[in-house]
Length: 383
Image 1 (cartoon, rainbow, N blue to C red):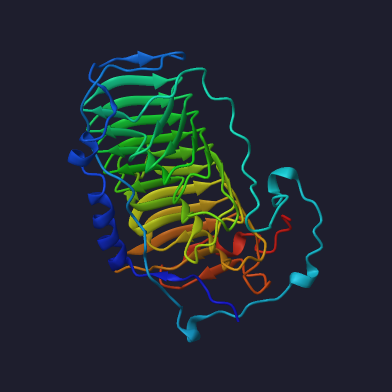
Image 2 (image 1 turned 180 degrees about the vertical axis):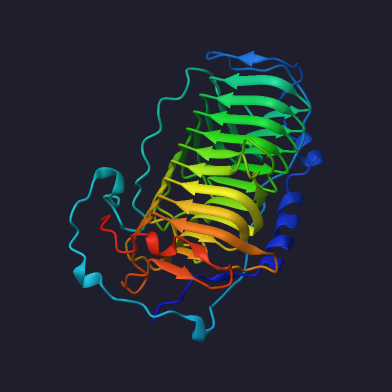
């Protein structure tokens, strides 16, 4: 019988987060050669390859790194239904289909679009800036993050190529109203890492072999937070991917929720604790996960390990049997915080665990009534 969602020991996560954050302190980043933007209201258009010089801020990838896992107690493991023999591989509509390759190590990432016709720059730092627009850049870094935005507001970075980076591609810390749009992010330790910020919009970007998380929100709060219309792929079973999207201790508001919508992500593994989208991680509230497409994302498709007022609606979740695959969608409180007012409705799931049995869902029963649970297609034909 297959194991169900591996539980994260979140006290270990907190310790790991603290350690990870120490790797990218303000002082350390300041020591790195980088391009610094000092002037407010700067617009860098396509064809611009340099910025005015000097000074910096911020942090690096935190969250669920190195977290231990444990099995669900045997008396909580639900029965699995082996319907793999019924799977005939009939093609569905293209938007619902599984990928062409389910072979670990296959590179299913789309080719990168042509990089802007500019000289590559070193890392860029924005510290205490306002009203800055960066575009048409090609940024790489051999030592640390490619782009750091710290203690700034009204920042836009768009239509640029970010990577390779010896660290996160983009770090946003202590900032407000930051928009990242139309970026090609590749070959980095992680994609976008936002910490203790508000109004962070990650919209219409493409991630390719972008490390641990394509996007992680860590204590991101307030209005205007969104991860919308992005796409991404790794080498199946041959990357450092954990959660494609991780929402850790982050929240929207009741009238303006944090939105994860319209994204297409594929090919995680071999992590035994990774997922496509993880929300309510160690708490959080007012989050909507809607209309995303996940293919072979990891151990779990979409996980809700805690939090309140969280909606998971209208998503498409598929995994072929992989050594690390476990369950399609789960709701199961894994912290001491509250968990309730969860809706899981209108999702289409075809998920095979590592033993080849259909295992689309798991309700741990400790988040109260999960609204809409019986209104999902747990036997969808997506492959």
